[in-house]
Amino acid sequence: MSMFDQLSAFALLTGMSPTHIAVLSSAAQEVSFAAGDRLFHEGAPAEGCWLVQRGCVAVDASIPGRGPVVVQTVGPGEVVGWSWLITPPRWHFGAIAVAPTVAIQLDTDQLRAFAEHDPSFGYPIAVALLTMVLDRLQTTRARLLDLYRNPAETPMSPL
Amino acid sequence: MTEMLPARYVVTGRTVETADSVTLRLEPLERPIPRFQAGQFTMLYARGVGEIAVSISGDPSIVDSALTQTVRAVGAVSRALHDAEPGTVVGVRGPYGVGWQPSLAWERDVLVVAGGVGLAPLRPVVLAVLAQRWRYRRLIVVAGARTPREFLYSDELKWWSARDDLALELTVDHAADGWTGQVGFVTQPLSRLPLNPAATTAFVCGPEPMMRFSAEMLVRRGVPADRIRISLERNMQCGIGHCGHCQLGPLLVCRDGPVVDYATAAELLTVREL
Image (tube, rainbow over all chains, first blue to last red; front, side):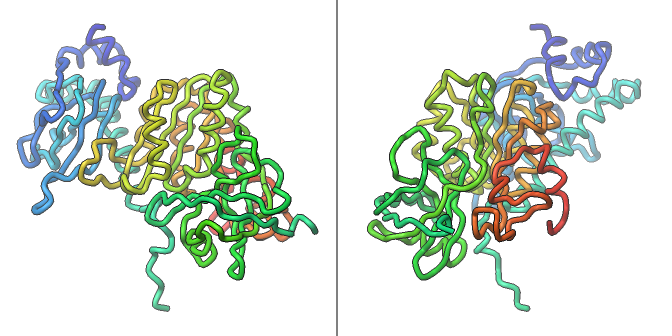
């Protein structure tokens, strides 16, 4: 399957025109990771964005005394890496493949240059990434609700 | 009001599922209650303590008079039932309510979405589909738990994950050492699962916000709201639609539910304090 077809099949990019998918294809390459391969380290300069096709990537944080703690996993159809979008571009968390993983890696320097040159390309890219970030935010909020806890654990009101 | 009289059952088996949940096997000491449908519940009475609604988690394809019910210790009655050792006699009324009706998914893809102890009332759906596997197309089970050790039926989940006619996705809110599975809320796998939305019937059970978030994600994916079935939980007391404690808008959940479709429930679930 061509890179164009692979990107077209990615649900997150369904709002993009064929012309823009073709532009995106020029900045994309398929990459593979073995289980245990690290995509990036927390605090390192943020370059790259991965559209996961197969496998699983864990987003983690290093906590003194506990080592790397997985805060979320990312699977097929999802995206790893958006810290390159904002200044300063540094990874806020780390990412490691926890299963053999195949992904489309985007050259984010090229992506940013394309977007700055042509806002009609940059806008749908921004919307796609915002959609992903919003989904991630909503799932994180849902987890913050701690919905599965036993109601008996709720501290008694002092009133 | 003979329907208010509990039948005496004796605990003949007690399986510890998690730190706060057990699965009880109950056998009748006299007349058994009628056969149950997947998704129905009973009113379980702990002698001298009180009575609560508990969903039935057994296999509806097994024809015997025993009941399988999973109880989480939350309040006084559920704690007494949770602690009931084999030999303890309890009272049982039921079965009550509208169940999941898995036959609505014949010739369709079945998507089961469970959050926390919501897996208990959904277990009969999975077992019913597996018992008549030829009637259904794909079977996908998505289950979420707070931590890996808080999944109900952990041995059975291993068995399900080994089957090639069932796709199992487990995800936890908080990973633990040694957990190599998914970490995230159940909506995350729902957002990316390969679905044929028009041919999918979903069965969703868990805390109410979890059901709302999951149903909304499925609607966004194109699954029709009337093909998403959810199980409501309210303060059931009589179990037969007389007392009104479980009223939710126009519904008496014990009689008109607990299982309803999301097209019916969606607006009701957004009304605060309803």
